Length: 185
Image (cartoon, rainbow, N blue to C red; front, side, top):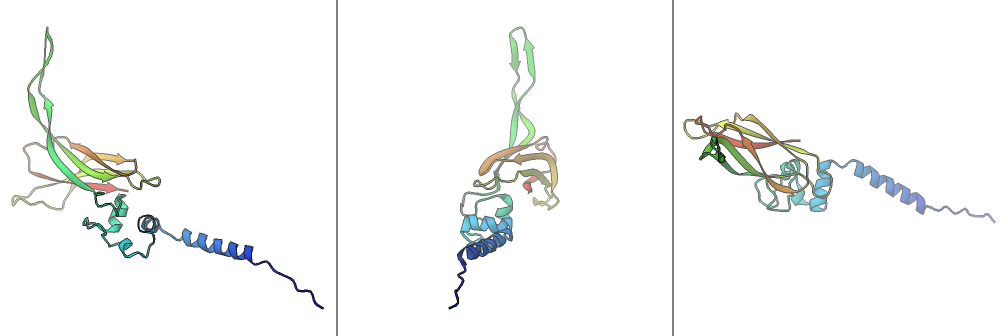
């Protein structure tokens, strides 16, 4: 009578399964991991790169690049206001102390905008926001020839926030300026 050898396949199956899972995770892109985080899978139709599940007017691929939450309709990237700043006029010094002059309009614009530092569940990479402008046309429009004001914000914290940048001299009596905030990754 021949004695049969038994082979324990369970540990081998676990090793093969673990190896296959490890290989599939290694093939995921950062965008795929983002899709899984917010939509549960990369095959969910709402997770498609060109989808806009909240109707914000921005594709998932752009929301990913900006660090926005595609499932939160208030997670947006937009300019909220452009206002002239004010500063105190000349300072007069007398025996009674320092007396400020009248408040005068400034030649500066403060551009306030809503942005995101990235993924609140992991270490987001810092995002650099650049304030740019385009000169208005005589017909009241603008060109797409935006140039940097030289002002940047580096956003390092996770989640959405409101911040601002100042365009020094932007409110002078020159041509009208149209602003945009560009994100560098």
